[in-house]
Amino acid sequence: MRSSHGTYKLWGSRGSIPVSGPQYVRHGGNTSCLEFAHGENRIIFDAGSGLRQVGLSMAQESPHKIHLFITHTHWDHIQGFPFFAPAYMAGYEIAVYAAHSVDRDLESIFRGQLDRAYFPVQMEDMQANLEFNYIEDQPIRIGDVEITWENMFHPGSTVGYKIAVDGRQLVFIPDNEFLKGYMGEPLRKLDDDDTETYGKLVEFCRGADVLIHEAQYTHDEYPIKVGWGHTSVPNACTLVGVSEVKKWIVTHHDPSHEDDFLQSKLNLTRQILRDIECSVEVQHGHDGMVGYL
Image (cartoon, rainbow, N blue to C red; front, side, top):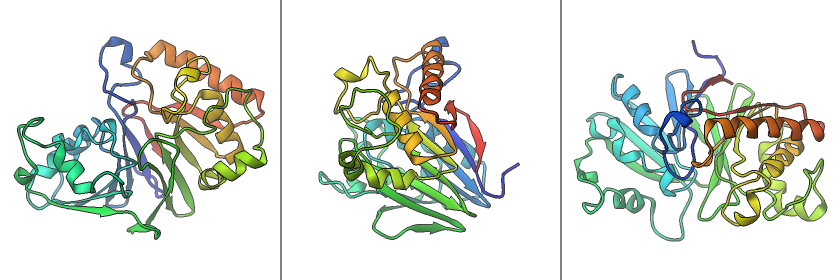
């Protein structure tokens, strides 16, 4: 049963590349994909390998318009698109949204991964009506749902999305390097320089009922990963604390992090939050996780 405020489901919570095996059973191995359902609308965020299963679910319904928002076009966020069943079914309309890229236009990026050198099916073989849209300054409304965005700290044109409906807010940020290069203790507040750099991001997340945000690296892993576009656990805890969000779901798990390691990482995250006196509820996202806004 869906909440009147909407239901969210993680179809993919892994970063970089899909993984499989018994050591990944609890968290799953599909790359980034989130669905938000409100009324008759099912809105998708990111087209990682988890998109395949979303498509199989949607293919059981009557053809309709599908809205697909892309945080950025790195491979782990679009690789499920060639396997998205509704794209091959007449009557479906698929509207894809993303930020402007300095490298090439959005349609050519999706068309490129269907090149004959990489994939046996081309975009011309897709029977759905495809449209490619750039997000601009104005929010996008889909039924009663309003979607806004903010630029993130990650290589390439990368955004995070905010879903607002009935006075509730969910923020989805799978790729973001908060406090880039900072190796110190978690902060309870930002100094003036950090506020100038990250203030828009903090306000974008401010008071969210649900924040789905990464914390890909432990403190020990982070020094050799600076600039890769991902946040350490302590720095992510700082963002959550200063943004005063109500619930945090950690996503974009590193492909080298097996279930037992991730459980230890979650325990560490909860300890850090206690240390900075942040009482937010925190969970690790996993493939198939369902929640209510």
